[in-house]
Length: 156
Ligand code: FES
Image 1 (tube, protein in one colour):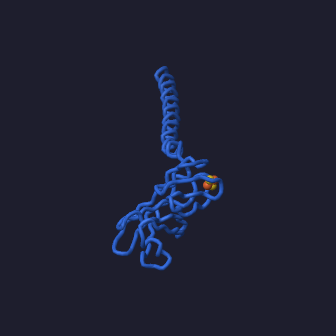
Image 2 (cartoon, protein in one colour; image 1 turned 60 degrees about the vertical axis):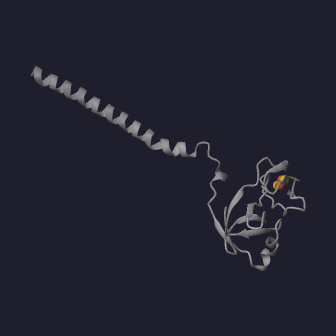
Image 3 (cartoon, helix red, strand yellow; image 1 turned 120 degrees about the vertical axis):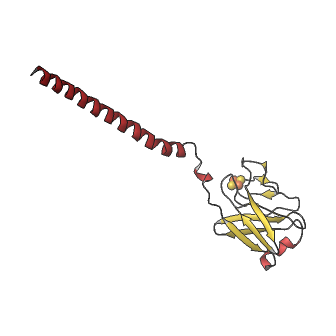
């Protein structure tokens, strides 16, 4: 009989240990499952999640005629991507976003001095997209360019 009581006590104790360790394990597993989600969103800039888009430009097309001479520039607005594409040398092209980093207005093409102005609040940028006058604080982001024949590929 005494052995039976001890067994019941041992059983009750063992059961309590199993329930407690199971609860603890569940808590640990739940906290581990939540960690990657919490870590992946912490400190992220929602604007930084921009899909990469590749566009092609036919340099022989009439609308791109300004790119036939060094210093020429055109605006491109395709598939939600807005860029200023410039011919920097006889064989090189550059491209930067045409969306002002201050408040999203469309900036103008570079003037004869290479100054890109925003008509909304007066920010100015150089042809590399660098801010030269505020209120914008961030540069116009660049896009990659690759020339093959008369086709310019832009990756923004
Ligand atoms: S939106 Fe360009 S300066 Fe404000």
